[in-house]
Length: 452
Image (cartoon, rainbow, N blue to C red; front, side, top):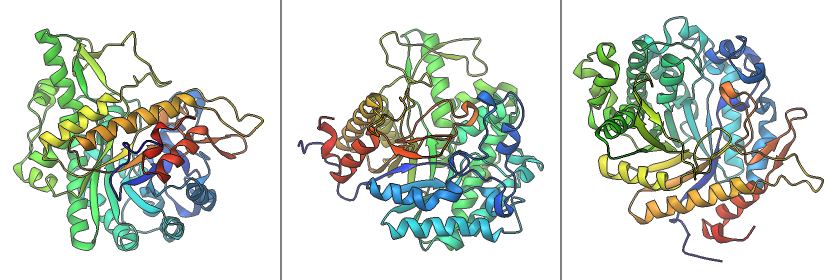
């Protein structure tokens, strides 16, 4: 067995999910609706009309799922909390049964030696707060901090890794600019406002955590490296815009206290002027950054690609997943180098990394053979090792996803899981990739060169 792939001592290996994608029972035991209940029950907005009403039924099968994680040797589990399950109106009254669900889940994880990593917000805003303007209402920063305080006081003695938001770029781009995700708005003017209030909410929650919490808190962002399609000035400028819009828009304010200048060009007269005090709130000291990595973009100038005016160039020799994302592990190494250089090498957890490929049905021998996913994991983990060797401070890796689940507007059409879920019976079957990853975890990376 090769030993040159061993990761640093204490490196944390695990997997990730989100509440609405796996829990099901969204209105059970006094929970309130979220914007995703409204979105999925609007005809035509998800593939096949799929909803998360049942999803993977994790709300009822959580003990079984934690036992499965333990059998696979997972050291950590990154999950999200459904805000409206705990606070049905988004603020004020606490639903004790909803809070108990997460308390019992954390206890079960700890009983199996699995480190819980909790994310406060993974896209499922309480519908009651959306009725009050959602992320367009400046008061939401305080609502979010109050919600965070409820969770911190309940769980911080047992949860030592917290994240405020998951992928705020997706929330604003999909939910407020292009309308592909809940709440389904399409507005050039709303998107930067929602983005800014997400960051203010993040800062307010970190402040609140420093007052009542004792461990670590960070922010999870999805980053996608942008490579210019050519040396032409137009393609170079388009690449700078695309990079600022997706990557710099959320990390620059947090670390540098300002937005990238390119955002003014992108949004034009829809770009607001924000008071300096907002950046004092946003720029809170973080204990780590969570980085979700899936693919890259080879970028060209495209005046018709509103509003960034940057298009993606398909690579003829590239390998693509079922979601149309190019498999490009070098992008993980390159983006970690950018984080290291621009933001003074903060601690980083890879909080999501994975791929949807076609998976055959469970075979007669009980196996699900998914060699493409194994290759994806192996190559990305080797790229991660290269980043660590180059000096990036990487603390752990969470594979996306623990199990096949509800993939937002794509419904159940795409499978990202290490564990196969039969959506008719809800039976869980670890795929070959789960067993491969289990060996990698057990060997702290040394098994990456094993033959499968």
